[in-house]
Image 1 (tube, rainbow, N blue to C red):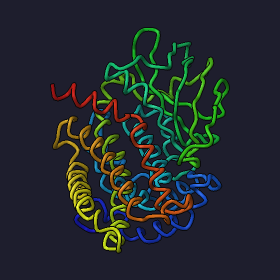
Image 2 (image 1 turned 180 degrees about the vertical axis):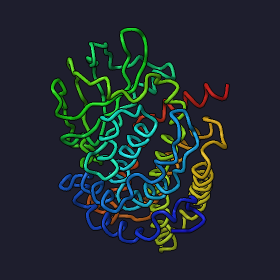
Image 3 (image 1 turned 90 degrees about the horizontal axis):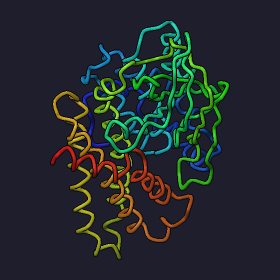
Length: 364
């Protein structure tokens, strides 16, 4: 791993980086096959006290500035070995971000303590809320206050880390038009999870759609009574940490390509290798700079980074496959796995189409 690629927070994981890498690398085939859930990786990171890096630097619900370099480095490191594990860590880390910005009720405080250690797994289900904020579609979950509870109905089209007891953070449109952030647990009455199997990758991430029917959520589980204000604050973190797993898989594919580009028969791909290398290095340097100081750039730069990082990852994995030849066509190979993992990036929310639309709207 080239030190020029690392955010300033790498020192937070440096002492355990090799052990974490080995732990993830030794389990990646079982994770890819869906035999080992990524929640096991999260719990291991919790035992190492690596799940909540930088969370305590969030000092208000609307603070953009936060120290995410350690988490960014860790997510990228995991993605070099296993995109599924990196993706699950991103989702869990974002849930910790929401709680750090949230209302300080006894219920919320007790729950975030479990999330910090990995004794509870976090699932972010913010896609419909962020689309609603951008004006793309309405919120998919509605609710009403009923005494000391919220009664919530609706559909979450996609979320991950939906293991039993997982803490799922959602935006809700109340009947008085307020948009709020709250959470429930997988297994609560009225929560029906439809797990998805047979994915190209990420089968171990407990991904699913969720139907909510009359789910009763304690009022004390509300994290924010103003979704829009809180979302504007966490979006740079959201996009920067998503970019981290894009950067991780891109630079691993680039490293694999560097080892084969000089092989006989690959001469015609040298120019393409040089082009992809420049793209990955440029995106990685931008990622390093933006994760070092979230408040130093406008939102449009984080949207652009997320789009460019996912495109660079796709290019890097395709190049690796082209250079690897027949051995990369074996389904169990690292080359084939990274190719499949990167295929997820254009459709993950925000999708490539949404990112391009938002980028155009922010720059017009």
